[in-house]
Length: 170
Image (tube, rainbow, N blue to C red; front, side, top):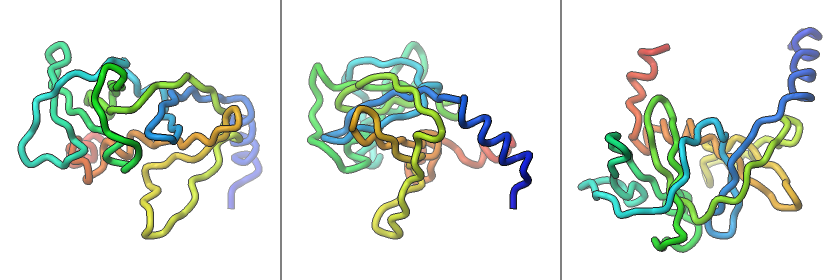
């Protein structure tokens, strides 16, 4: 059980703190991620394919001397039609001291959310893995799915970050 002081501090923090999220579209759904992890937003460009990589890892590209893996979130989350054209967007992220690009259909807006506006992600059991969800929020009558991009990018499933080196740093 939490003390009154910690409960009071939590409510004071949540009442005044707003976090900025970058919202984007995958298929028909609206998603958002913490804007502090965004390095830049750019158009899609051809990548160098990597042999035996999962289908949602499109390949790598050279971003000013950094070799950057590109993950297509539409394929990873199995939403929308996967096409690559002049409207396809790549959000470059800085996660765990590594630059990673994610392919999305469109970038919408920067939204500010207080912690009260963020509802916990529902538990789906084995039917859906909700560990990559930070929560849900309603903005202008649209449900926004908040992605825990750090958990997704550093997951063993993607294999983009050496999790052994992360635990060595702690």
